[in-house]
Length: 206
Image 1: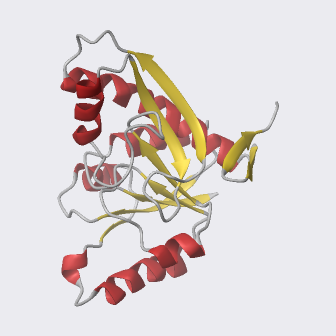
Image 2: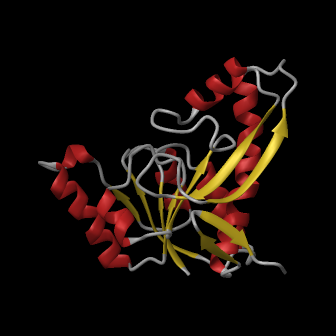
């Protein structure tokens, strides 16, 4: 299976995925890494892994339609089976979501449907978790649809909180979960060990 990875930050989730690919645990090839930030850490990691990198930002185009067309050109060029969002801080164009229905994945640093929706990303999520006083947080891998964080949930994992953790400590703990969870979810997809029924992902019995 072939994928494109989209990221805006340090790229640690991409790195964890690539490690599983290189070890032979994940039957996936990453054809290209794309970012809306030219100097993002994920760009350096792509270079180290000798994976092509593309910088695509709305600022490069005169109008949203041309920006959107650039996404379609990427798909035409690389013909991916899957789009993997790994800390990508832009909304994927609706026409791409239509074209790649249930073939776009994202990881969210909380247990959806809690602490999701527009504006809930990165440290904003962990701040909300901290302020709420919940005693469990975690991460969610889900398919992407046109609503923020509303696509079918593939896998989740949780961590108990005592209430004494700082926002930064919550983020660090959840990130460790993300690094384990995302490759597991992608392996389910790559080995076709799931089906989707009424917005629910059903994992096949092994």
